[in-house]
Image 1 (cartoon, helix red, strand yellow):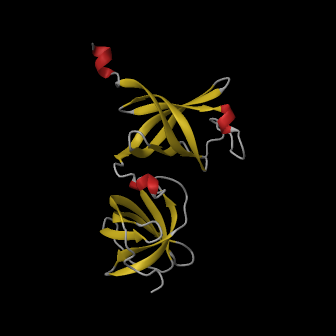
Image 2 (spheres, one colour; image 1 turned 30 degrees about the vertical axis):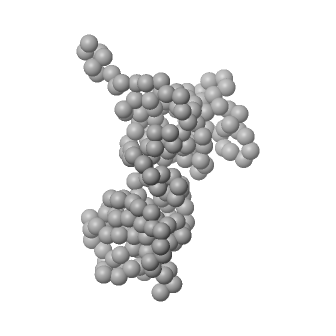
Image 3 (cartoon, one colour; image 1 turned 120 degrees about the vertical axis):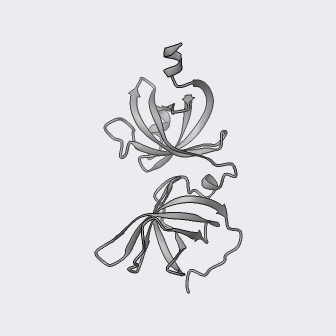
Length: 205
């Protein structure tokens, strides 16, 4: 009983997931899943098809990946804790870091659950809306660049909107920095996300 109580409940699951790994979105098979992580499988024929790059413990750009489980409507980030290379497949053992229930498919439909993506938006700072460009977007939040120097306090809560993605929400300013050209770099963590059916603000004002 003790050993059972210490073991995370693990269930065999026949489903697929989308993972953003080494700069590409890949479809993987979920072998099993528990409350702490999952084991996924990639076939070599899928890994090396087209222009895709190979995956091994030596070629991983990052051990943290973004994932999306369409059938379970779950999105999040996970750490690759083990890579097993077999004859025709690679097995990746993943430990969940952040996970969210994406009931309306907002994160996936807007391609905001993962990847380096450059798009424009507006964020409310110092009682006014400021245009920004994204550096990257993930399920946890986004990193943005503003072409101006702003004095903003870390920890503040504000709102943002992507006009071309029809996505808006509330975020927390996690960190702030400045580059050599005086641009403001900000790390924002999602508090809430919603579809934005109408364009409320102009990116050109």
